[in-house]
Length: 140
Image 1: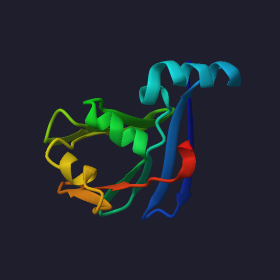
Image 2: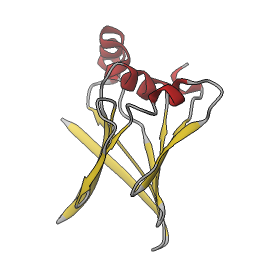
Image 3: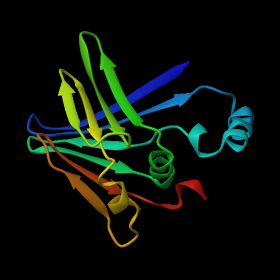
Image 4: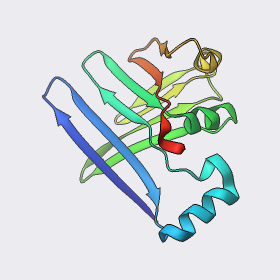
C-alpha cells in the first residue's frame, strides 16, 4: 500500500510542495527490507517547489543513485478532481507535459548532476526546471 502526504505552503504566486510516498511496514521489517534491496527500497523524498517561472526539484544521494541506474523518479500528489505528478526520466532528454503531469528528461544533464563541484543543473523549458542536490546526514 502507498501513503501520500503533501504539505502546501505559500501564496497564490508560489506553492512550496513536498510530497513523499512510503510503503507501510512495521519498523523492524522496514529496516530489513532496505538492507535486502539497497537504495531502490528507500522512499522517494524528492522535494518540489512550484513557482510562476518553473519548478525546482531537490534530490538526495539515493535518488541521484537511482537516476544513475536508469530508474525514473516520480513524485505525485492527488486530490479529488485533480492532482499533479513530476517524473525525472534518465532515459530521455525531452520534456513533455499534459494537464497535471510533467516528464522531464535528464539524460543530457545527468553528468552535471554527478559532478561534485556543481550544486545542480537547469533544464530549459517550458517550464524551466532546476534540479539541485541536497545531500545531508539523513542516511547516516
